[in-house]
Image (cartoon, rainbow, N blue to C red; front, top):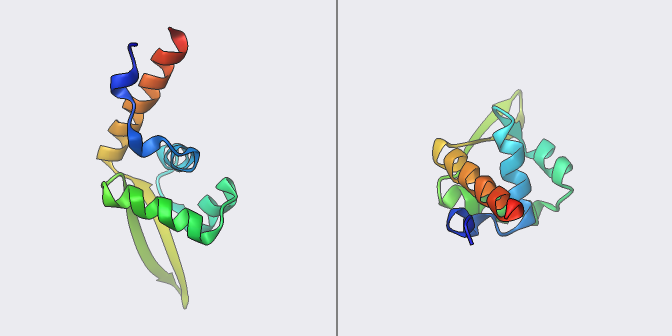
Length: 96
C-alpha cells in the first residue's frame, strides 16, 4: 500500500507522535508545558525525549532563569522533515 514507505518507526508511540505534534507548532516549549499537555510522568516523558534527541529530531536547551532551571525543546530540521513525511504517509494510508 502506498504510504507505508513514508512511515517512521520513531513515531510508532502515541507519546512521540504527540510530542512531535507539539514541537512542530511551537518555536520552543518547556518541559513542564510538554508534560502537562501530554499528561505524562517525568520518567516516561524523559525516555521519549531522549530517544528523539538521539536521532536528532529535537534540540534541548538548558538554562537558568534566576536560580530556577528551565529546559526547553524545539524540533530540528531533520525532525520536521521526518515528521512531515510520517504524517503524509498516514494521510495516504487513510485515504486509500
